[in-house]
Image (tube, rainbow, N blue to C red):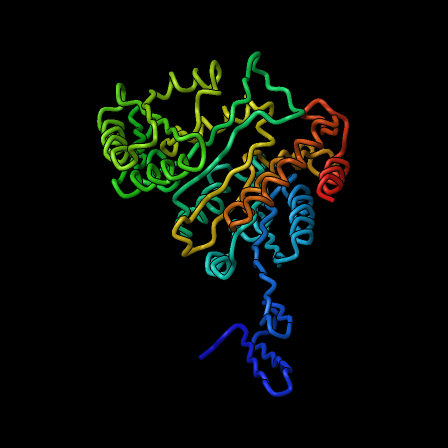
Amino acid sequence: MERKSMCIISIKSEARQTTLLLFFLQEKLYSKCVSKVGKGVNEMKIYRIAVIPGDGIGKEVVPAAIEVLDKIAQLDGSFQFEWTTFPWGCDYYLETGKMMPDNGIELLRGYDQIFLGAVGMPDLVPDHISLWGLLIKIRREMKQSINVRPAKLLQGLPSPLRNPHNFDFVVVRENSEGEYSESGGRMHSGQDEIAIQNAIFTRKGTERAMRYAFEMAKTRRQHVTSATKSNGLTYSMPFWDDVFAEVAKDYKTIGHTTNHIDALAAFLVMKPENFDVIVASNLFGDILTDLGGAIMGSIGIAPAANLNIERDYPSMFEPVHGSAPDIAGKGIANPLGQIWTGKMMLDFLGYQELGTKVLNAMEATLAQGIKTGDLGGTATMREVTDAILEQLS
């Protein structure tokens, strides 16, 4: 039988001594064993993370976020990260004609989680190629069926809303089908050209997202809002409403409402504090979460998690912001979105208290006025990162 590590402990009771024999059958050390008489063996947990910085500022903000995650792991002392970087993205496409190698998915399967920066160089690579060749390919083949994006009023970051009222909500977005299904086509040409895009909703995928939203609401303020448009989309959204009503019956202690997407977008501007967990289809969730970033004060700070909730495959954590090639390499990129994304990875790994410490350090840094230019400050990326590291210390 193959094992990553094996610890054999023999105890000589007469001498009351403990002999610890360590046998490691892999090239790398996956755990640290410490012998303590009468207390057994303690292990240092190691998480193997696949890192894809991607394009533009992704190559800058990802290392900054890794510094913060390594710091919080060091302070905790019970685990550490092992990072492996893959140079995939638009530069890789320009060299090879592919956004990632043919065996890229197979390589990623060997890691615990995926930490992604930003992907896109629209002047050189069409967005549909960069998106479907890397980001969506990973989401689909890793069965990352749920996308989670929080939005909250951060201390030290003014919202453009006149009365934001300390809003704090999360959007749970179905991430594998719906309006972004690969179904349709184009035919004919000229004035007779036709484009067909099919939106495919399955009961399994729809119910999975809704149950995840209700389970999340149990840990928050006990309310779920469904985003629909059943007064305009005659098949998919009435189906969505029916499944939502059925799932809600299993969560009698959780309040729930349904809002049409156009009205819901307006409500997020007028009274965002009324929302707790919002569950939405792929397209509606995509739109609502960008709006969530905007009312926070910047889309550039919004994080996201693409989750394989069954944990059969690695999940992927990425900021919402783009690659911003116009400021890449200048040292002025905002690292907060990537760092908040790292906080979400900590949460998913079971370190919610540490994740909260990271978010608190971000807010304390903002409250001190240490902000990059996109937030109205003058700080560099290095200065923001250092301030967060100091807050954690």
